[in-house]
Amino acid sequence: MSAAQALALGTGLVLGLGLWLVFVRLPVMRRTTFAQRVEPQLRSVASQSRLLEAEAARGALFGPLERISRVVMGDAVRRLARFNVSTAGLAARLQQAGRAQSALEFRAVQLVWAAGGFVLGLLLVLFSAAAGRLNVFGAIALALGLTLCGFLLRDHLLGVEIRRRQAAMLAEFPALAELMALAVAAGESATGALERVCRQSHGELSREFTMVLAQTRSGTPLVEALTDFARRVRVPALVRFVDGLGVAVNRGTPLADVLRAQAQDVRDVGKRELMESAGRKEIAMMVPLVFGILPLTVIFAVFPGIAVLELGF
Image 1 (tube, one colour):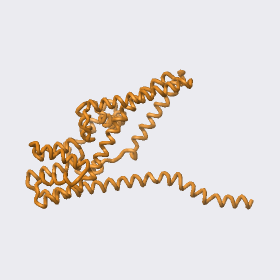
Image 2 (cartoon, rainbow, N blue to C red):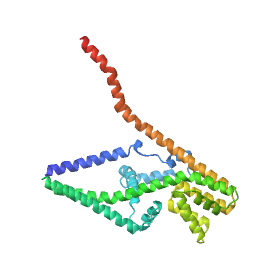
Image 3 (cartoon, rainbow, N blue to C red):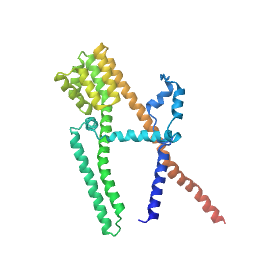
Image 4 (spheres, rainbow, N blue to C red):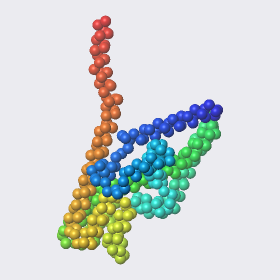
């Protein structure tokens, strides 16, 4: 690779990175969270004066550049936090996925995937060398890139598995909560209702409830076992369910009403997410309509008239 080619490659990479940063920071590319939608409707409870905040902003080390890059760096830190190399963070993610693997076993599987990526990169390099198009810098970058991709792909698949399992538990929760409410209204205790639910249902959430029952039978209080369950799954709706159930058990609140309210809350969340997804799909459907179907319609409408005019001339 000559100096001119290296300069062109570096300039293209810098330009592409800049365009990518501009694209991902557009307002339409940033998904608005529920907290951001609710925040304008709430009155601020911050006791600090806004004058002090403005003074701190003016005293920034790099001025506007720091304020511009702060958002990008915050997103990068949050995304890199998912690839936590600590054993505790990985063990928590494995519990969320419902896996019985240890953190060490999962890291071993990740290394196997990385080795597979390295072997694939090595084979591509050998094919390039056999074809006479070997580039040392490109070969090293390809091998290392595929190795890193293999390592991160296994972690990404674990995240996909966690999201699918959480979605399955949320889909099962309203029916199980209604069943528990019926059992409690019939006179059973919270533990008895939970046991009946575990006998009558099958799924991810029922398996988690079975683990909660196993803890209670070993001597752990029900509220403490449910708290461990909420800490293990880390689903906001289930965390609220555990909090409401704990309050109902400790203070004597009617448990059936609490369970029905929690089930209705999860149904409302599912409806809101479905409507938001439908809105996004509706906007996405405009792309093939505007760039595919509409031009063809215009062509079919205009072409016969042009053909008639040409025949007339």
